[in-house]
Image 1 (cartoon, protein in one colour):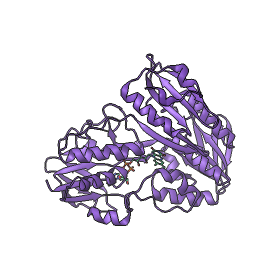
Image 2 (spheres, helix red, strand yellow):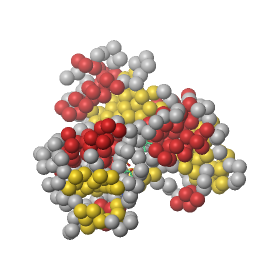
Image 3 (tube, helix red, strand yellow):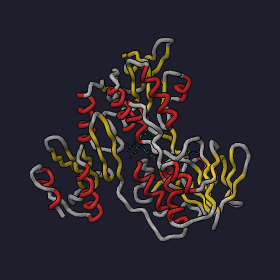
Image 4 (tube, protein in one colour):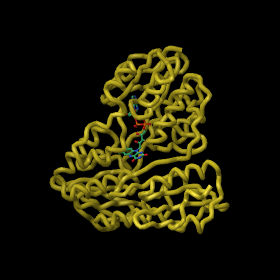
Amino acid sequence: MDKVLVIGGGQAAGWACKTLRAEGYDGAITVVAEEAHDFYERPPLSKDALTADAPLPRLFSPEDMAALQLRWKRPARAVAIDRASRQVTLADGERLSYERLLVATGARARLPVADWAQLDRVVTLRSWDDAQVLRRRLATARRVAVIGGGWIGLEVASSARALGLEVAVFERAPGLCGRSVGPEVAEAIAELHRENGVALHLDCGDLHLAQTPSAIHVSAGGNSESFDLVVVGTGVQINLELARDAGLDTDQGVLVDEAGRTSDPHIFAAGDVAQHPQLGICLQSWAFAQNQATVAARALLGQAVGYREPAWLWSDQCGRNIQILGTPVANGHCVVRRETASAVFFYLDADNRLAQMVAFDQPRAIKLGKRWINTGLALDTSLLANPDFNLMQLR
Ligand SMILES: Cc1cc2nc3c(=O)[nH]c(=O)nc-3n(C[C@H](O)[C@H](O)[C@H](O)COP(=O)(O)OP(=O)(O)OC[C@H]3O[C@@H](n4cnc5c(N)ncnc54)[C@H](O)[C@@H]3O)c2cc1C
């Protein structure tokens, strides 16, 4: 095998290319990427990139990039995969052949109302270029509305407050981050933002936006407020059209096995676009994009590998580090451990096994949680809740 083609130039694509070389593959690697930049990671885009003049958060140094010896097609868009001839067509009509293909097309920001795209005071955040636009817009704004109380919306709210702006968050659901955490955590996050001076409009119902030359007006439930800028963070659209149109099995994302193989043995998928069998979702996390892509690249080289890690992601907001491990469980119960400057929320199943934990400023607890999830340890809830008890003793 001496011809690998990668579609997508994000974190998953970058780690796959790096892994292919690290594992000794010395054939051609062609990368088709819509964005003109070298591989970079997105977490800083809603954080430092909005509050400071941060450089492109490159995945690899220019020297390491050169050592990968990649053939770039960028900016270029792949528009079709012909599985029979094993070729990918680009928007300009060029056709590239492959022996193994990795689909790492990620996701794009989604607007809940298509017409909002016509309003120039409405912005979304997915790419480095989006972050540059948002940073410039925040510099001249006084009042900002964030639509969507998920991780990215809340990080933008936190960054805008750090810049001294007035911020309101509008969320349809009764709680924040409702798709990924339970009500106890949602309330703790809401408290953080209220204390940080953010006006939270939960359960806000349908929103109506109207733009005038000097402002944008957000109407909810009969009330209208004016802002300089609206940032929409209402989730993403997974970029699965290429794979779906090529007849690969898809659901929310491209269905893959533990090794990142799709329903075509010559095609693999990694990162946000890949729907992992155990997780059952497109995880959309930095750690998954890196580690699952690493596994997929090794599988592409024929190695017997599998990705079997609990979901893990983090968020930085209002000066706090929040780490989320595992996935919510139906009929679970919550145990809270509060220490002076930190807190951990444990979500346990009926047998007191850990399903999910959310740690505020407690990164070391996450390492223990990984072990408990992997071993299926039944936990003593009174010890978990006791801040004087050393969790390291639970084995
Ligand atoms: C603002 C922001 C903040 C985040 N913060 C955190 C965080 O704090 N913690 C955390 O765990 N995760 C965070 N994430 C999530 C994490 O960054 C993503 O899970 C990760 O970037 C996914 O990587 P990926 O390579 O799968 O997809 P992407 O990074 O989306 O890369 C896909 C690339 O493929 C390109 N592409 C798509 N279609 C085509 C095509 N047809 N042809 C050519 N190129 C194509 C896209 O333009 C894009 O460059 C954040 C994400 C964002 C957007």
